[in-house]
Length: 186
Image 1 (cartoon, rainbow, N blue to C red):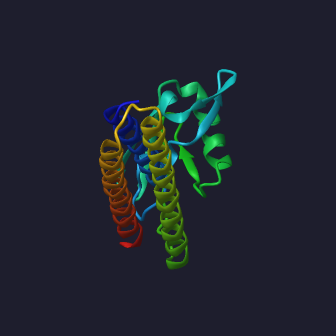
Image 2 (tube, rainbow, N blue to C red):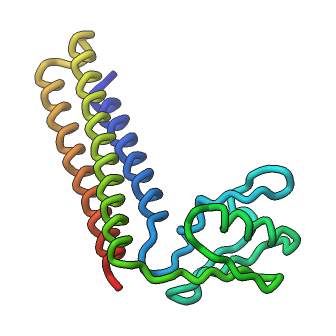
């Protein structure tokens, strides 16, 4: 493997680790209603579990309310059941065409637990990034052993890998800080 291939692979994998963190953070509740809160819900419709966003349009027209408009109103009861069974603590209300979910305000204790979860997710992402760094450093060492890289090229590659690691770890930290601030604001 060339130095460029090692670096590209490491950067690509670190991007994916950040993507996983971003997706996980989107599912964490803040004081405001957010369509991402119901993204993980799967509905038993048409004989198989289907992601909610494939069955309905989801929006948040007001800060404390999520509105779900099923494309097919015959599955509205299935969607309600899935929301209640999801353990998100939501109580859906339906008028036969649209489901409304009022998102209750978060208590201080719940907010602190959510912030702890955000920190945990950020640390998991940082560990994943460090594991990618370790794999890339091993690849650089192996390339040097296989005479594909000189010692100087290997060292330069390792320094660039470290720079990438710092960059992506700081991005993960920033994402977590922003989400913590959103969770703690009223």
